[in-house]
Structures are given as structure tokens and as C-alpha cells.
Amino acid sequence: GCQYAAAMGLKVCAVDFGEDKREYALNTLGCQAFVDVKGKSAEQIVAGVKEACDGVGAHGSVILAPRPESYQQGVDMLRPMGFAVGIALPPGSFPVDIFTMILHRKTIRGSIVGTRKDLNDCLTIAGSGKVKCTVAERKLEEINEVLHEMEQGKIKGRCVLRIAADP
Image (cartoon, rainbow, N blue to C red; front, side):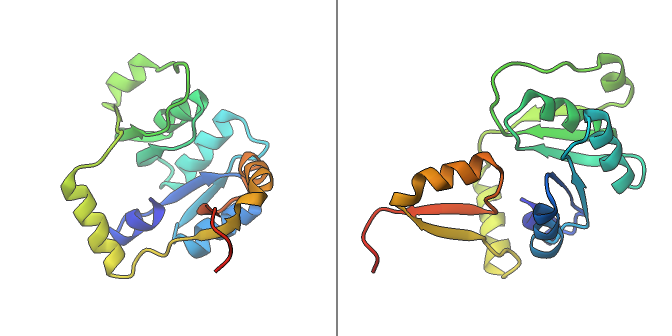
């Protein structure tokens, strides 16, 4: 998502945890800013994003973390008239400050799939070479290590498990 946004000329601020993710976001994904959530409160995370986004907040947020807190932060980090798009499906709900949402004319929406035009646009951007996929291939026997690394947030991009024997 970061690379597609950057390819469309948007300034991207990634929100994740750890110095390795900072390096990955800024140097590989093409983000202009990074907010490290490690050890920070929700208020500090939101303040960090607002500061990175001209001191006002993000024009839009794409919520990928499957945690209700991420949804609240995704809305709170918006500038007036900003859009929050939820993609992750965490259980539960999250509170919304109705007064601020109305006063600042914020929009919250969910998205489960894109349109054919979205797919065509993505393929056009990828075909132009502006997107570089980060994919690690591992053996099926390593599944426990892969799951542990996933839980720890150590996997960058995607990890594919090879079922067949090595070629």
C-alpha cells in the first residue's frame, strides 16, 4: 500500500514498531515519514503522525492492524475532512468522538475488496516498475519459526511457505 500511494504522488507516513521497520518503510517502501509505536501511548502515536503530517494530521489513514485501538488512532490522527479506511477485521468495536467527527467532517468507511478499475490501476503501477514486492520463501518445516516471527512483527512484506521439495 505504501508503494502504491507513493507512486500516485502521495506523501506516506508509516506507523509500525521498531528501527528495522523504520528503515524498511523509509528506504524500501518509499515513505516520507515513520512513527514508531513501540513504548508509546495512543496519544503519543497520534501526535507523532499529526506532527509528521504538517502538524495538522493525515489526509487519510488505511487501518491494517487488527486491533480496535488502531481504528481509534486511525480516526484520531486525521486532519479535518480526512478519510479513515478500515481493512483489518478485529473483533469488537471502538469509540468515536462524535462531536469531533461531525465538527471536523471526518469520514470513516470499511473496504473489503477493490473494484476492477482499482485492480487495473494497481497492475498498471506495478507494471511500470514502481512497486517492488518483498517476498521471503521458507520451507514448510519452518512454519513454527515463521509464525513466531509473524507474532513478533519481524516479517517484512510477505512470507511464502514452500510445500514441494526444493527444485
